[in-house]
Length: 296
Ligand code: GRG
Image (cartoon, rainbow, N blue to C red; front, side, top):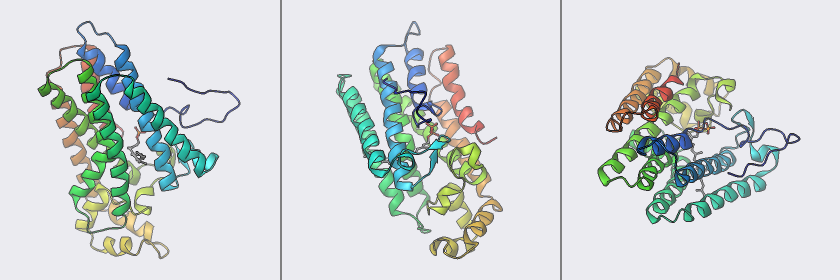
């Protein structure tokens, strides 16, 4: 993948790296599914495409959320401006689409195009339900699927397509990615309440402050009716946000969210039981625990 580096440039979202979870899954699946543990060139390209799509979505997301930092560095729009950030995100989406088309596999093109549709859909859903205390838990999970799990699920399935797997196993790969992605998003949502700015690489408690109601807030609303009033008036009075955070943190919401993430992580692990023994299989089966370990 083309990466522009210069010692004179300050760190960017690309050089800051991130966890590279999504390409890691595609690379591990490629090796785990190959009889001699090889990594094919097409799987390598698919891995690059998944990270390009992910990075593009982060750049756009930071514009929408007006976020100042990401991966511990200034966001593109805060370093340059909104116009540059939107164009940089578009550029990455366009590059990803070009390399995707050049894989010459219509099924893979369909899977990854669907992801880009889901990302946009998830972002719209999230915007529509801001500060909406009446939203269902199902709406939250649908949004989480679109914004996070779809990319992991469909790229895992696409890795299986490139390996020539039959339909039932493709379904298992999709299920692995979907449940892992949901676990990952719930963990991310918990960390927003429990992590520090430094741990997160972005401001803590920013979801609730922006009116995004995630698993901890939705569970807390069931236990603490006073929380609804604070959210509905959009934390407009001084001390509202701190009071809301205290209501969430003093309820069972974090424990219940943790149990939800553990359930998704277990389902992800079960979906890959059939993979033949290899180091890559062991690494893939360790991923659900890695996702949960971010909580401890
Ligand atoms: C498709 C035109 C078009 C727009 C995209 C903005 C947008 C619509 C979608 C946003 C999707 C988004 C940013 C979801 C967040 C997913 C998430 C949990 C990101 C954090 O992932 P990590 O922790 O990040 O893996 P690192 O930095 O490790 O890569």
